[in-house]
Image 1 (tube, protein in one colour):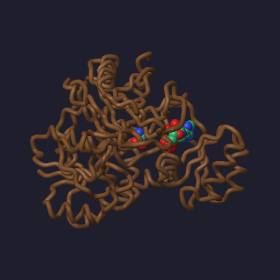
Image 2 (cartoon, rainbow, N blue to C red; image 1 turned 180 degrees about the vertical axis):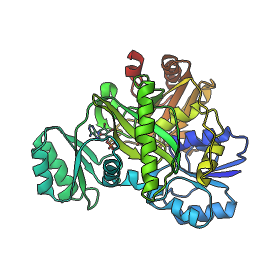
Image 3 (spheres, rainbow, N blue to C red; image 1 turned 90 degrees about the horizontal axis):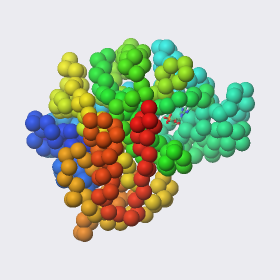
Image 4 (cartoon, rainbow, N blue to C red; image 1 turned 90 degrees about the vertical axis):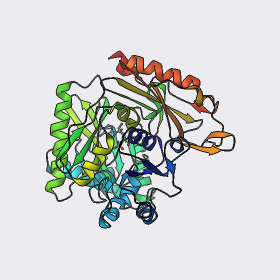
Length: 419
Ligand code: AMP
Ligand code: GLY
């Protein structure tokens, strides 16, 4: 089978790596891919949002199955377009992906179906939003209703902060003209629950936890994720089952009921609060960097899962490895702000331990070898019987990467190890 993976970060590298383990897959294309992916797939110089270009490529090469990584491609309607032309594709339609691309849609769906989440109100008027914020306890959580590259959520701890954020979102149209959700602030540890979903069929993946802040001790600005690990010891089996039945399965069933059956990966960003597990957000795709620590634990053939979901077939329950995985992201100095690129990375070829995997997030090939391409550059994933031993492997791998323009967090998984 020939498979096309759309995307080019660490998440896609992990998807390509999992596909490579399938005996059914003979050829993998990745658009646009990156320097690490190029070692196991053929990179195709097409943008992830170039739906017509990707469609023409898939038809021309006789691609049997396409797998979509990033949400921008889903929002661009890639799944709708491929299906219309009779091509098999793994991912939700643009309408079903609204569970991620519109916060208000997701909130209304949860309210209609009794899925636990923070109380909220939507606003398009700045003054009305300010009045509502003033009537509730601080902090206030302000969310721009649309894709904002992870920058659309502000936790306002004072009225001044709320005013500045709402001004940005509603008066100055920083992310485009749109609406804002104001919701209650919840407290507790967060974790990610990804499930393969095909209509009302739901197959859970192991839980993972991301680390969103840039620096140790959860300090500094929010990022796309500085590391992750799986499993998550602070969530009990009972709590996991609640999240599976009362959140993930209920949401999949709700989407079917509302005529928007979901196919692909449904990602629940969940919080363990004192009042139980609640939804912070949904995504309509694999999480990044959670995928890089979850897919290495998959023992079943991922091609069968992707193809089964894409065709709406009854699937067998995927089998997962008990062993833990922990990934440390190495990012360019300055990230998530402006950062340089083109710096050489050495030492990658000295890693030949099966329990250390390096996925490329933002790299490019140059004449002298692999160089940084800005932002998050690599994720080094360690495997082990326990999270502690997985972490030692990840740390060992990080130590082998030679590039003095990268930084990383030294406390990935620390809270789980203390648990
Ligand atoms: P989101 O993009 O909705 O996941 O929000 C980004 C981050 O903001 C989340 O990972 C949380 O850490 C935080 N956050 C979002 N909503 C809330 C909330 N209602 N209460 C507390 N923190 C929140
Ligand atoms: N790790 C968070 C996300 O993928 O959105």
